[in-house]
Amino acid sequence: MQQMHAHPGHRQLEASMPRPTIKPIDRDRHHVVRQLCEEAKRQSAALVGFKVAAMSTVHEFLERSLMDYDVHRGGKKGNVTLVSADGRHKVERRVQDTISFDGRLQAAKALIDECIQNWSKDINANIRLLVNDAFRIDRQGRINTARVLALRRLEIADEKWQQAMQAIGDSMRIAGTKPYIRFYERDDATGEYTPIGGMTTPAHALCAWCRPLEPGAPPAACETCGPPHETSDPAPPAPSKVQIGPTDI
Image (cartoon, rainbow, N blue to C red; front, side, top):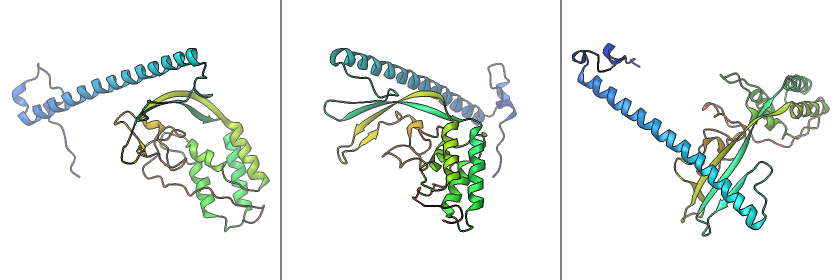
């Protein structure tokens, strides 16, 4: 594909520049790009401000509910869903934990490698895929949290495997929390809630590595994993109930 280069005079299109040296189409493109980017910045700031105000509004309502009806606010993590009286609209507030692992994750990986070496060569290919992908490092040097946690859902009757799963659990740490807010409107035709355009926080979408996507949720990111998955990442095989002994499957 032919690489496009900006006009030399386009790099610093200011009033002090010799305007005759700039072609009209370059000047036009410059102003279009600048105008759109400036508007994008304003819209982004407005959206952030709205979400902060919405969080505050939800919090204030919950405080009033607590005083008037002595109800408990949210769950352990402060998650709450508010539905309008007619059931047409819904607001969800979620608090997401960011999970990280300490050095014991490497011990878990070593134990898992020993398990695979001890098992027969015809080990379930799905399990090999899950293990290999779970510990794959992305371009940012991060391990995908959801894939590691998916290993713990496998029911494998092997003592060393169980030790590895315990090591994964022991290595888990809450690195931080982040609140999210989502807005929905019920579709009269289907009766299902759909996100109000642009108001769904992408980090709450559920990827194929964790759970099926919610109706209308963007597939780019995941509430468990945090960052979006690579678009080339294959969906994982569904965890299966298998019985694995020391030497067979």
